Length: 114
Image (cartoon, rainbow, N blue to C red; front, side, top):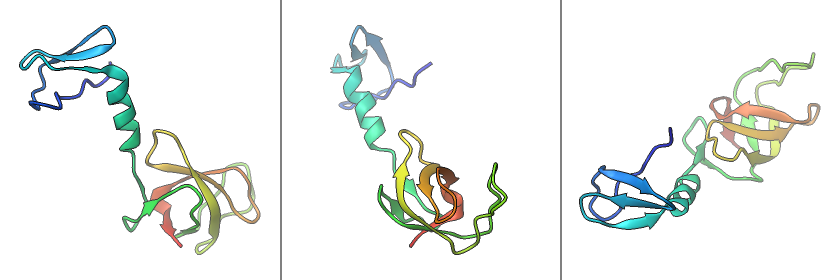
């Protein structure tokens, strides 16, 4: 079941969906369901191990040796992942390529912004 947000006017959680809108039973405020879904997608912030905000196109550094499934080459500590891409709706993973391994999906807890 999807999470229904609190009312943006009165902050009460007595909200129900009605067609294409959310309706607050306490104050009567109505707002579109799609607008609240877009707001939650925009609020996804990806942070590295040090708390720095990551954006698409950034370069990150691997902080420990990582085994890579399907490859005999590990990612070494200090290795660079250039031109990362953020995964939609996921603040724990990024996509990127190293010099030797292409098509990686990595957890941000093993990365720091370069």
